Length: 181
Ligand code: ZN
Image (cartoon, rainbow, N blue to C red; front, side):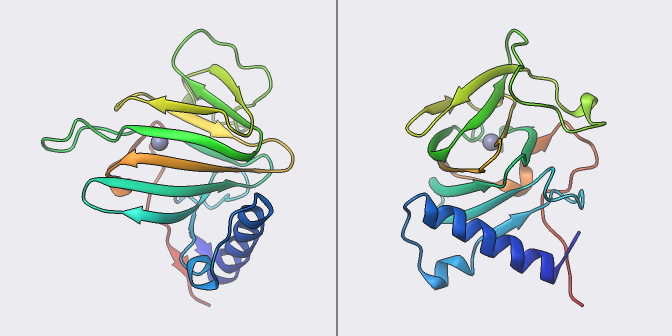
């Protein structure tokens, strides 16, 4: 959970990163940026900020912002009824992203958040810079992280059902709870 004040401040920081990356975002859109702490209450370590540009029954386009040293936890997109699961392309717009998928352990630049070794199992490191992109087939585990400076990415995908995503960390709750004070 996260306080309203933390939520609003993270939303502003995320909008600043997106604008610095060259995206034009309206004030109305800024208000819709979703701040996701995955129920862990340590947003600066594990979390992501998401602006949804397109969300239909078939496709989804989002802008993701990571703060410096923030990690989007390891997850995968499972099948849902007749849908084999979300196929997703991540394209970096600004900053550097350390992206991790199944394969040989080449983790060098990135780091697993302290004390969370059991929650990060795929360690094939891909270093992504602006204009790098990667397409993930449904069900493939992945997590990613920004170093100093943070990062902004596009996520293009088939229909997103974020609430049904699966996470390695059993303590994760995908929907952010905001404490109104
Ligand atoms: Zn994903």
